[in-house]
Image (cartoon, rainbow, N blue to C red; front, side, top):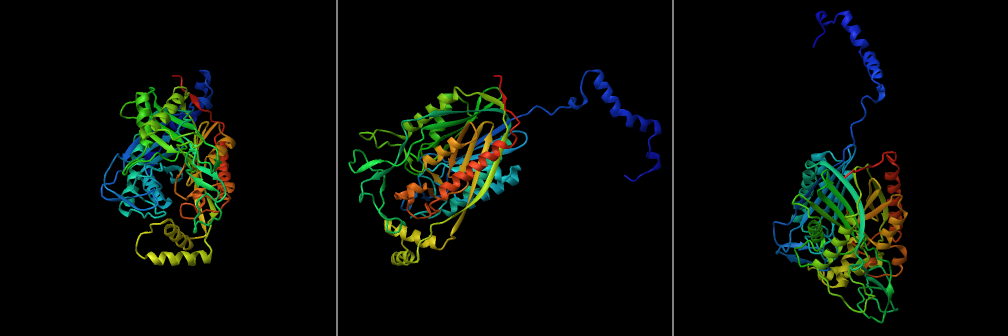
Length: 498
């Protein structure tokens, strides 16, 4: 509006306006209220929203990942989902997504995050998206003898973004708590040290004289000992409505998978269903069950005298029971500080030698347009493919703090010893790791495990990083945990009175 002489206020009115702040100060003092506290910050509010977005393929057949050789499937045994929680502490927001998939490349996930960020305003650096590692879901990442199902990969990207968007739309006042149960039955180290000359070798694996065999069987006189510890812990993040009704849970367990006929999410959603029943939660409840540090873990303990009976239902029941027992002891908070940090780490790739590449190309040229079938053919092709890739790889690592809880995201298949090291050295009271998060960069055996050889060390797209990669990754993740611990350290969680 243009300035006009008639718009001026009378001088006495201007004087009153000028004096008004002083009048308010004296009024507040006369009532015993300090002016600096008259307009305190609003009460801290923690909010959460959750959804289980169906990501079951709609076009068939689909290529299934998790096998040495390519498998096609058209039958849906059970539905696949992108289970999502969005959290908001009033200052920061974060999204956690667990997708029923074997593994998902960073490029695909970055596309989904970009779409979700445009829809929600959540920074992509505050989105942790992981794969459960079911071996019976459509392939979105080529590895070993399996190609990408391009149509399904295109379908999955917007579905993940939609899951984050819907969970964000459902944000509502909530409270949160943390605990940890155990399942000592369904976990064992699958890598065993064998007598010399017993373990299988791989001509194109980049190793010689392997001493480790995966799944040695029971009462094998040539099997000496497991090569690493187990982690039977079942961490639980519990989210409730302000009225105390279960809204969502995030559980975690360091066990590879059970095994299912495709197309299936394996045991992961069954844990969520069983926990929902134990909690007597209503239909609005959403469960997420993530994979921990299971790179060398499976459900069978080969130190036992014989193979035990198990099923998806029994394993899921044991894990859910462990989570439920922890849930019953959880102290809930009406508010906790949410802090998240993301870092990029460049590591080297174990590139094949020129003579190895020549020998591998001779085999690959021999089967031409056919799919590789034998182990030699598969790893020969992996050798050729690796020779055409960059000699370094950039990894996306994350740390999320929720009060006294730390969650780390690593884009690899992580050994249990690495997860236990992170827990032990973490500055936070509770910490657990979600593997295959924000990418899929293969196994990361610690250096001493590389020296023993075995499947998880064989050079391929599923295991190609330098032998010191695990040391660098663990160190970088601990640095991120230090950062999120130091940030907003003076803001204490608010305990719920219920």
